[in-house]
Length: 330
Image 1 (cartoon, rainbow, N blue to C red):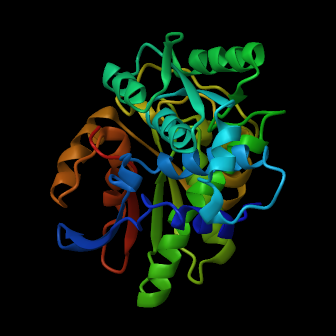
Image 2 (cartoon, rainbow, N blue to C red):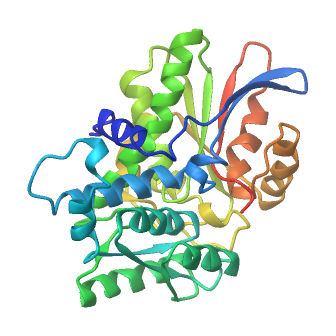
C-alpha cells in the first residue's frame, strides 16, 4: 500500500530532516521505549513528515520530467509551485506542516481552523506564510469548509483524513508517516532489542495506521499493537466494533489533536485487521501524562502523551512497551 522507500529518500534530501530520538528508560523500575517526535523537522510534531511529503508529491505531479530528491527545490519546481494553493482543515499540527511545506517549495497555503483551536496555532500558521480562516465550531465543520473552499477556488485540498472518493492525497500524507516506523525498525535491527507492545494514539487514525501497517509489513519481531483514543472520541474502536465507519458523539477533549469523531477510511481499513486492541484514556489521565513525560525530559501536550499514559498499564516484568510522544508543548 505504501511506497516507504520514497518518502525517506526525499526527506533525507531536506536539510531539516534528522532522525528523532529513541529513548530506552525506566518508569517505576520497569523498562520502556519512547520515540520522541517533539522536535521533528523544527515543527514540533510528527505531522511535519506527512505534510512536507504530500506537498512535495503533489507539486511534483505538475512537473513533466523525473526529479531526483535533490532537485525538488529547484527553480523549475518553484516556478510551478508559485501558482499552487493548498487548502486544509487542521487541529493545529497538520496545518503547520502543510503551510511549512508550501512555503519551502514556494506554493501557498490556506488553513481552516475551528474555533476550538488555540490562537497560538493561528499565529504560528501565519508565521509560515499561510492564510488562516476560522471555520465552524468543530474540526468536522472546518473540514467541510476546506472542501467547499477547494471546490470553489481550484485549490488542492490536502487533508490527512480520508473518506469514500477521497483517498489518494491522504495516502500520501500517511506514506510520509511511514518514515517513523522505518527509523524504528532500523534501530531495533541494529540493537536486536524489539518492543513487546506498541501504543499508537489516534485521532482520525493516519499515524496509527501507517505505523501499524509498516510493523506488520516488515518488522522481524511482531509486537502487540494497541490503539489509544480519548474517552470522548473513540471513533476507531467503535467503528471496528460495528464493522463500519461511524461517527461518535461526545464533548470536547483536552486531547485536541485526537478529538476526532469520525475516523479516516484508509486508517479504518488497515487498523480493523492489523491492530490487536483499543483502549481509551480520560482527559485527566492525559493531562497527567504531561508530568510523566517531563520526567524523561520531554515537554508535550495531553495529545502527545496519550500513548505514554496507556503504556503504563502494561509495565511489567518481561514487557518492553513502546510509545510515541507525537508533539512538543506548542
